[in-house]
Length: 324
Ligand SMILES: Cc1ncc(COP(=O)(O)O)c(C=O)c1O
Image 1 (cartoon, rainbow, N blue to C red):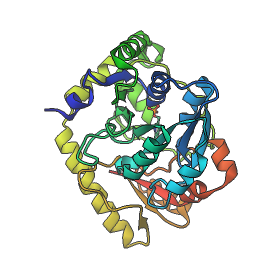
Image 2 (cartoon, helix red, strand yellow):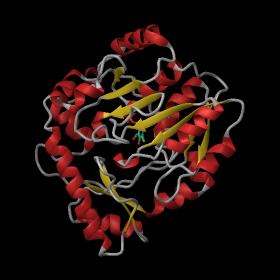
Image 3 (cartoon, rainbow, N blue to C red):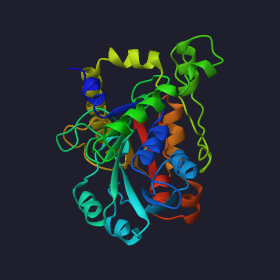
């Protein structure tokens, strides 16, 4: 069975073009609204502010440690009577340990969102990514170069079958992203979007966007039909083995040069990239880029996190992502 079939189980999955839109409707489904508080890790992409801005939710940021695990004391210290949900990220496809976070959520009556946007493949605690929280997020385009594609997984019956039906109506009513395209072909559109050398080799431009730059970037599109058909025939088994092998190779090769790994690759995990810490990140980043490796830095932090200058900023300044 293709891993996609399980993930797109019609009993729980609702399709969207982007995970940020999936999250907005996930929050709505859980009944979150104006004035409610949600807890995000401080190492988070600024686009994740979009759903909160739109719904009037207040975001508070908890710390993550150097292994990118949630700092539980920091989480507990932020909970108030207005807190409704905690979001945990499986960074780069490395699953979070959610046991204690789940306990905290249970004790405090909070929803848990498992954000597995970085990787929809592999296993976390023996189950598919995105199934361990009340709701889960997947973003297919981060592993496979398709135009768009994301899913909201509704894992608890919080709002019942009626709620799922109304989510499906929203999803079906979203416009197609391709309709906005100025490009002649699907391949050109994907190439332009990701800077991929699909047609011919192109130099990748080293551009690190400023923090906060995509905080308003709403992408209210439906799951692109062609992207879905690309995914349906995708050789996932090969993809999973390749990514795991490349992760280990990078760790071995880069450790010898003084880079430090974030974590050992957990059993069953399928990474989206290999994150490594290094001092003088920018020098290494440019050096690998100029040798033709598609390295990147992540994330474009929310402006508020960047300005506060806490541990997420120091993690960000040392992290380089190597392609797997
Ligand atoms: C952890 C995480 N979750 C969600 C998103 C948003 O995904 P999408 O671009 O599909 O909206 C991102 C964006 O890069 C991300 O890094």
